[in-house]
Length: 175
Image (tube, rainbow, N blue to C red; front, side, top):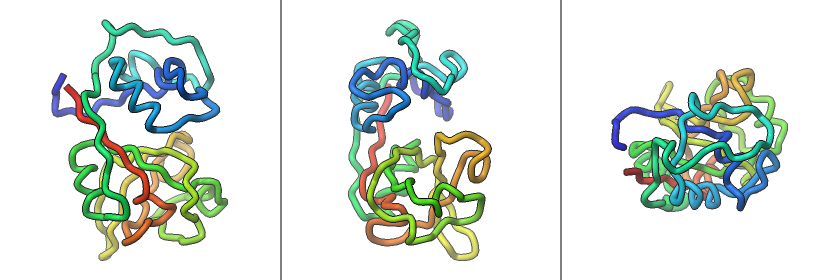
């Protein structure tokens, strides 16, 4: 279903239905993408987030989006990650276990104290520039009270990137 609209897809469906992962206790973005390649994805409004593990409540006939292919983004490349994001939301992995990241409240985050030991998958939804500093716009799963209403702007810098953002990234193609 190509709509040229950005749909908010159901995180809860992934928590409840992706049996390779461990629900709210975590998983790997590759597992989530595999699930999406084999199962249609519901919208958030049709399958709302409950922030707890539940029983899978969907069937193939109900889904709105089916992933047809998964693309890996070239590592350590600002240009390639931006190109992927230009195609649509892109799954990126970052290090999020450091207090400096967890206490983020706003602005362009560019602290090397974040580290590059990957432990948290998030969604890159855009990029921009402010006062000559390029950044990625990232949607986190920690709710609207964290960061900039649930988002963080992470500086786009060469190499592994801030919080390791340019190490492991995937984006889907849909039908």
